[in-house]
Length: 100
Image (cartoon, rainbow, N blue to C red; front, side):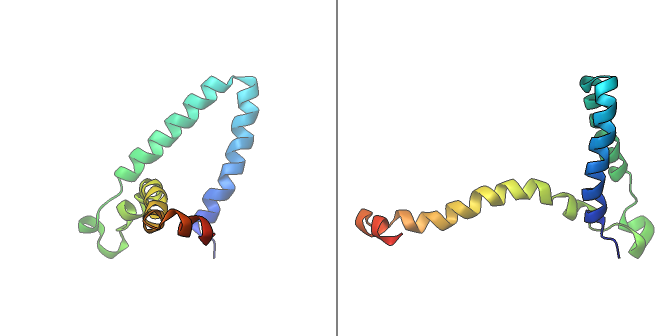
């Protein structure tokens, strides 16, 4: 079974080969514009997907949930180390330096 993440990870390399080839011929600025328009069109197309009320069980119910992972990643990456380090700051300086 092919997972969607594997497909996306493999297409990154294909896109870099194609855009790199045409970037050398046409120009990197134009290829940047093409890639941004492609990403914008894909994002717009995701917004046009039918909802659960229209298709029922066959609809992509979790599109908003799965689409939120990239946005949550940065927040968790900043919050979790802060929460882990906060109790260590409360230690006396001698205990903190001698701990590790």
